[in-house]
Image 1: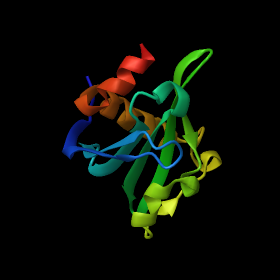
Image 2: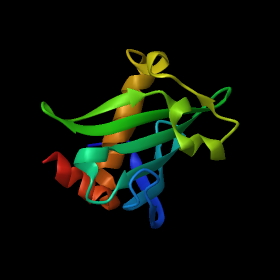
Image 3: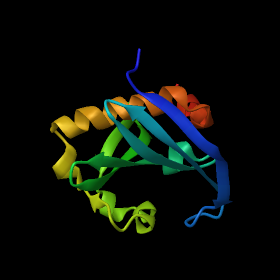
Image 4: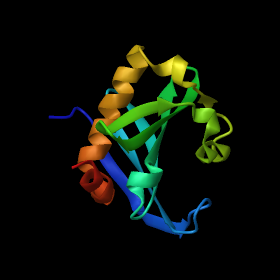
Length: 138
């Protein structure tokens, strides 16, 4: 049982994908637990998860402000999986200029990575708008 609770925010939003023109879907929400609240944004191209993957961006509070980190979902020859990526490469963060954007090397192998993946697990299991992503992982 997760120590985090997920609160989806609004409905998902659909816009044309910047790279292919197909429908790009965005879902937002909040994760509460362990004394804090993390905001998240999930983004994927409908029907193209296998080709494009999906991105989940987390905005986490710290004692010195907010940090932003990004996680990519991909299906590879070895199966589906998640990988921390450089947050500075994502467009999501333009809306949060106050956030300190973390690189992959600043996250991987740290206690922050453990927390981020616990939060990711909660989002993955509790936000029904990610059903398409979960289905592509099956």
